[in-house]
Length: 318
Ligand code: UDP
Ligand code: MG
Image: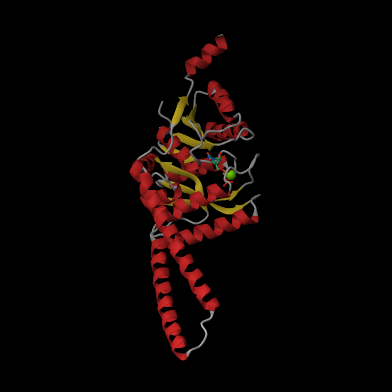
């Protein structure tokens, strides 16, 4: 039977939480009394995540496991899950229980009222470092200032989306996907649902600084040309500065005054700094164009694991 609800859960080295995550999600979904499926995406975990997931799938035919050939990142994992989702509505949720599964019935209610995207908006972030809270706070505001797409503040990927939106998302085919930006860009009828972001159930964050930077870069450079404009303005200012400096130098030279080497250094450093900044910004875009031109897939799947009902019964008999 076609499920009403698909739940997509990316997992990377989550052996400590996967069992509890499945239990809580399954409980919430069962209480709905509607057909559902749980799609776990194993994003190249190096611990026992896959083993545990296979065990769960063996017992529950509603569980599907997509196993990546290596770690392709959270956003790729979510996309792979969406590709597999067959429900009329799909919920994307982290595996560490920071996003409460108990919010799903409320999300479904809003969906039934006609909203096509119901996104979780964090009112509070528990158990996260001041650094993370601050960088997230700043990032969402800078992103919004820079982009023409209105990406809701304090919103992660925890959301319910209608199948129409899933189809539209999959049609975008971006190589450096920034899903929350893409969903905003798509439009459709969207509404927030406010929740308190809980502490991670167990384990540590799988988003180290490097991955956070990558995600922030994808958000900014995939959705805004503002950095290019900033580079342009900076270039103009530095040229103007150089011009003024030239005039001053000529005047001082005519008057026979000593030319301060410090001033020279300052100008030199400022000019180099600006040039490299602009090159870096250009590089970000060229890199993205390069990625698109190569046309490589965003992720590779080793296998999809799902045990049909019969297999489960056979096993019991045997
Ligand atoms: N994740 C993933 N691939 C990665 C990093 C993270 O699939 O390369 C998953 C992770 O298992 C979790 C979700 O993405 O389900 C969010 O990661 P995490 O909770 O570590 O991020 P945080 O909440 O600390 O930002
Ligand atoms: Mg988390």
